[in-house]
Amino acid sequence: MRYLAFLIVFINFNWIAGQVFDVENIKLSGDIDKRINLVILSDGYQASELAQFKSDAISFMNSMFSQSPFSEYADYFNVYIIKVPSNESGADHPGTATDVSEPASPLQTRDTYLNATFDSFGYHRLLYYEIDGNSANNTKAKIYTVLANNFPEYDQALILVNSTVYGGSGGEFPMASRGSSSGVSADEIAIHELGHSMFNLKDEYYPGDALAAEAINMTQETNTSLVKWKNWIGSNNIGIFPYGTTGNAASWNRPHQNCKMRYLGFPFCSVCKEGMVEKIHDLVPAIDSFTPVSNSIDSPTFPIDFQLNLINPIPNTLESVWTLNIVEFATDTDYISITENDLNSGMNTLTAVVTDNTSLLRVDNHDTLHVYTVTWNINNTPLGINDITSEINNFKIALYPNPTKDYITISIENTLNQNLRMDLVSLEGRSVRNVSILNSETQQIDLNLLSEGIYIANFYANQIKIASKKIVKY
Image (cartoon, rainbow, N blue to C red; front, side, top):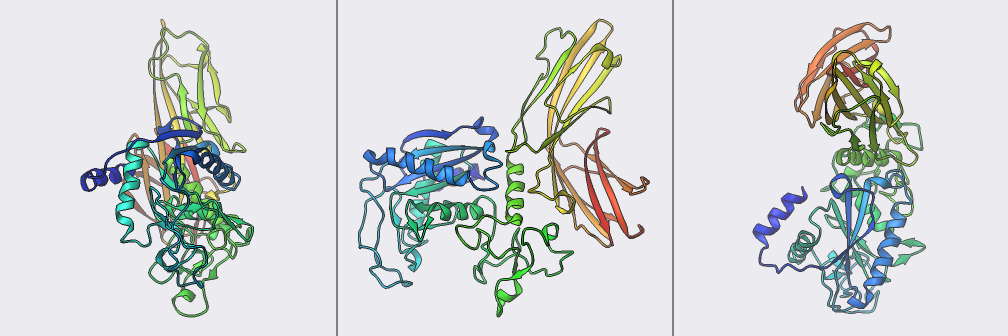
């Protein structure tokens, strides 16, 4: 997505002069191509105030990573700042808001690089780049250009404004001041808005008819066995709560009454956290690197060491299963050694399967599974190891609806374009369906002839079981 945005910038906004600013890393967890890169831009900070901007950005970052699920997945993120100097300090206060008696703040106009403006769209606390959407088009192009010229690898960007007045806004580039109101920091605005821009969460106050839609945390479903957050019903105060009592709001439901997506200063609810972790898994595989890589060992001798370098959540919830020639060899370890006696003559296959068993996901009733694998092919000859080749694969397996009455839909995506085999097994251990699932295709499996009950769907890649999921047939 970010590269498409840059293509649009270069084609449509190439008249904007590129400018290079000072970029600094304030949190480095790993390589930029193996982490989510959050970039914070300054606005309303003069060149002499950029040290204050760095301090404010670190304060925001610390606030963000003190909250779940950012705290658990902190090592999946890098954070960078782009020090964009402004000619003047602060933000515009035009005094045009209609939701307060103006002037609610001293009227002022400030010459800032990204035109941070309070009273946007008629709301006093709405701090945005320009006064409204039409005026913001050129500034948005300017933001794209700053990112393209200074950090094109960004995954998400936000803007921190040098104002002690509480305010902020959402959209593609969330914006927040460094102010506070009634004990709530404007950091909370940016964190809430990241819920929208990075994780596709909906507001849990009624956002209006135009923005109401089916989403991770918004639905018109009222059946507790069918609602998309059924796996959390009855836990952590999750339920099905209408947005309102009249009109369209009454037909839409949220999962919690006090989530950050409704009230600032509260934690994200379990449903939102699950959706956020799902997106993190989409963006960053749990396997950072591994050894050996193909043909990296010259004339290997026994024992041969194999290692996974994982990006561990805090606390670590990753689980690993190692199989050698389809037989389980080790579990929950990042490192193993293979001796000559462990290998057959000829080609041997060693596979490590890594999954995240975090309690923030309830996998049995959750649509999607993420699985990460490394496979080594070891050619063992009478003269010793001839060669070792390796490959890494990332699987995304979606299975829905669950529970189901008649059909189950399955889709898989993986980086190596492998097909999977699904073996559906009864609780008695009897295989009742065996289906080949093609990569990048959606298949519907007919379960009408099966009795009601619980079944286990086992997924195999090259005869190695990589995932299991419970299916309820009613």
